[in-house]
Image (cartoon, rainbow, N blue to C red; front, side, top):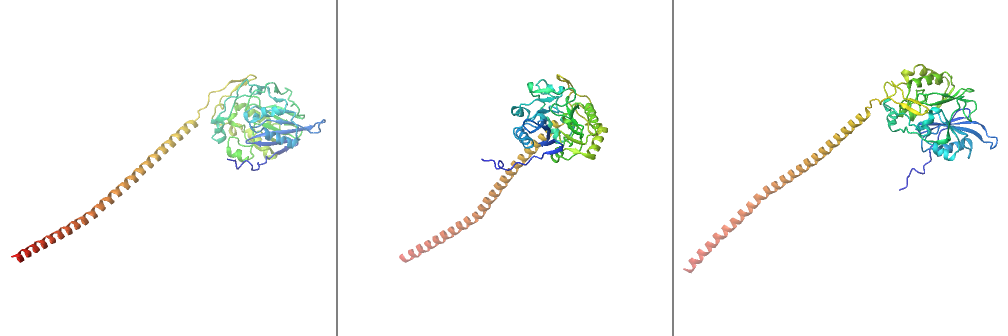
Length: 380
């Protein structure tokens, strides 16, 4: 059977021109960013760099948007990773098969991009939102890019991105970085803070602009996360493009970022969770230690819901069976009463028939006797 939806036109992806030469667009719930960095003198096409690689399965979409923005057959000069979580590196291997370009990240992020270490486990207990609950199935495995990935220069310079500098902003991941262009105070904040409440499915769908702390279910060091937000707020950005949510700018953004930096514990840190009291620790080799998991009540709740569903199903089946039996019994009783009634009606009829027969027989006998007597008298 043919899929009737196959030939429907695809919804166009909205690409935001957030700042001069800076473009961002959403893939499901995470942003991919492209930055123009000048003009290639040989091809006369724009030079550009890709920031993060989105979710798995969207490599063609990224290449299609890149071709529209920068021309066909014009790969980026490099790919810069703000960090290596699954939603920021999903298309990376597919892209690298087409674009033979270097990948750069912070040295503390290398273990998760070279197959040496998995990330610490996610913490779905930090929030009751759907996105936090779904995070139970988010992968934390590393990928292995081999000799295609390199550490960023310690100087803070960003390869192939003149006028930009990188800032180490750990907390959400050990080697997370943000990118800042001082000339127009444009900040690519990664997931150090985001412009939507990423734990809420409703907020993710509506993309309501609001400065929030890092996505809580993947944040492994809340003290470091707070220090990172304070550091970025001190840069006094005018435009913000984060890993999740729409770009923000102006006084509203500055006020909300300042409020978050000054009230991070109250606004961003969960009341409970695996990493709230004790962070995970890591170095250049990967994860060293993680605290024990927090109490997760969801499996119990789901088990309770399952038992309730089973009980309800059993009760329904028993009730249905009882109802059928009752209906059958009622039908049998009615049938029995009908037959008895028919028998009662039939009995008097048989009696009347029998009486009539007897009367006829008696009358005939008397007549015969009279006839015989008369015959005898005549003969005499």
